[in-house]
Length: 441
Image 1 (tube, rainbow, N blue to C red):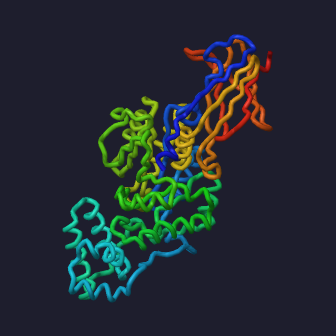
Image 2 (image 1 turned 180 degrees about the vertical axis):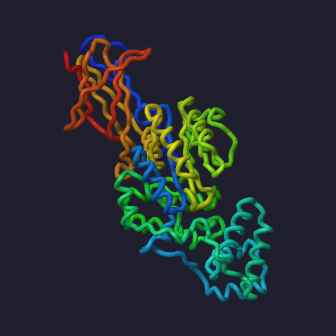
Image 3 (image 1 turned 90 degrees about the horizontal axis):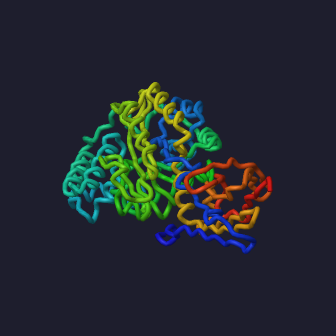
């Protein structure tokens, strides 16, 4: 995997002997961000809460902004539902009376407990997982024993409270999700039931990952199985090992040597990193003001290497840490007003662009009135087709430039910087025979 993504960008100029050329002429780079923007922003939503689709999405649509929605597929009618896979549950429950929980049985017991019939049991599963991920393993064992003691005695209760990621009002259909995907939004996996993946045994962990992927592929298509998010922002090493085998990209972690990841819980800032790219995740909470969110955006525009990944959950009166409609309108409008400097795109699209840029070779041939560019990308062409933005320097005397790329032809604007005159244009990876020509020569 590391070698697969670490191909260094090579730019070679093959200058013919038809006369002297300015050394900069033909120099071509793939710009750091699509559209030659200063940075990128991805707006993401977790849990598939209906208000995200009925309140937040219309705001985004009115501004022509696209987002990523990580949905819990087991909530959608027609999907594979949550279930425990393994031994007879009654056998496991009986064993808990005789054998204390330890490293040999925690995962099996933590996998089962959420499916023993009550919302309190689901809460036990979540708390066991939280303790385990914090490294408080002995406490996780003790809490597991406590939960199963309640199950055996019939004391585990079923509350009337709705778990935040399983709101009863949620009713979005696969047909609706498919239409949202067709509009350019990313609909992606947040697993089948939103479990604590770190305390699932292998078969139940893989079911959560693979069944969710299978339903997304079946009901939406290939575009929805590229990225995923493991619940609770887990970065557990074991979970990451399995999840990266199922999904090409995870918002939880992208182990690229050229990327710095600053998670939601970190107080580090992009300016503290020397990496070529920084994925800076921020989680707007109910108390987070629009001014704070705007400051995050300003930080992106003051650097050239920052990708701001916003992680939203609740909207209005539904979900965890809900944000009000008016705040979303204010902040999303601010993003839109800075679109000239920001590339605002789904998580999937930004990931693909960065990987393509790192895995693409650019070769250029310069003639008197023609510059030919050829791209070769080492990634799977069926998976990676995000358009790349190229910047090519042209002779100073050119006053009009035409781009020919296959059957397409367009006039390009000539711009200048300290090095000379250049043009900016977009093309798919692996494009061959791109021609820039002096159209008034």
